[in-house]
Length: 188
Image (cartoon, rainbow, N blue to C red; front, side, top):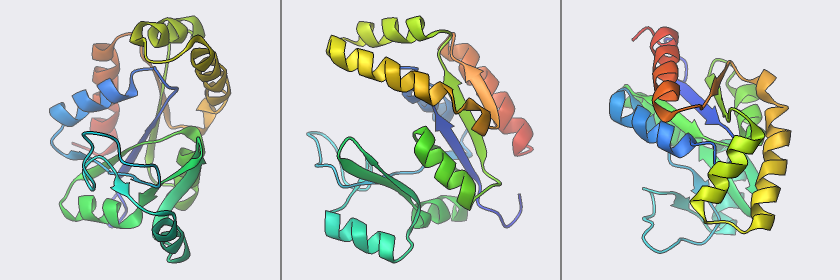
């Protein structure tokens, strides 16, 4: 992958465990760095600009679009999110591989712009397992859980667009499988 953007996209339904798996990968593989996304959503308590997100105004986000500064951007729940080219270039210039956690819509856009990326979809063993995980989090209403499970059904229809699909039966198994994929893909 010499002279190409080194980028890994990880997608999967809400509640599947992407965040936990990614945290493990970042601890275990020093060659990875999480690409910080840009967003127009308001900053939440405890979040730090340029660490958790690049918090942009709608005007600044529009300017970034006009200046072709994103490798992808999408509207999600009334706010906009995007991956800045500059962020991926910064990571690659530090001899690291960028890691992006993104929905299927964003992943498809990135793959169109950068077909050489590595794309991994993390799936639940079953939709019922996903429902149980969401219920155990106790952070969403029953209506929100149903909406997320319905969204997951749609997202699972797009797994053929990914290079690899990892079934998250346990965090450890998923971590090990993804490390193996990354190691082989990037000859680490």
